[in-house]
Image (cartoon, rainbow, N blue to C red; front, side, top):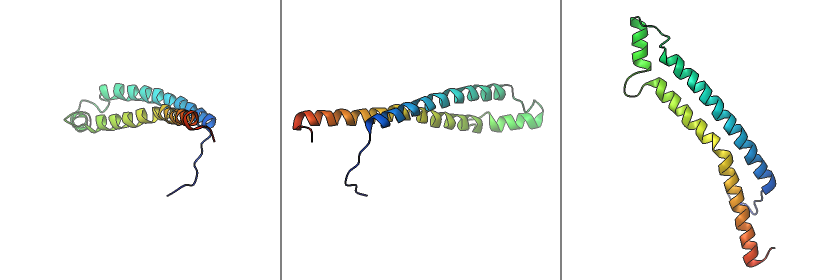
Length: 110
């Protein structure tokens, strides 16, 4: 796909990046609260200490790659990545604006 011109309003893009950062930070804080609650619940082994409960715990919470830990770590990775998007967008937009300004100084604004 080829575009003749691509233009972004830097003020609007930087505002959107700030909003994305705010939402990402909120999402991360909520995730960490939820993750702590889940870890607490898993730590108390709510499935019990009878044979079925022990068997469930063994297959869900223990071993080399327990599903409970894998799911929580995968969720953590995704939420952390989303929480960083706003800053990455801000850096990209600001870098482009800075480069445009520098190019304008070197070759004159058009």
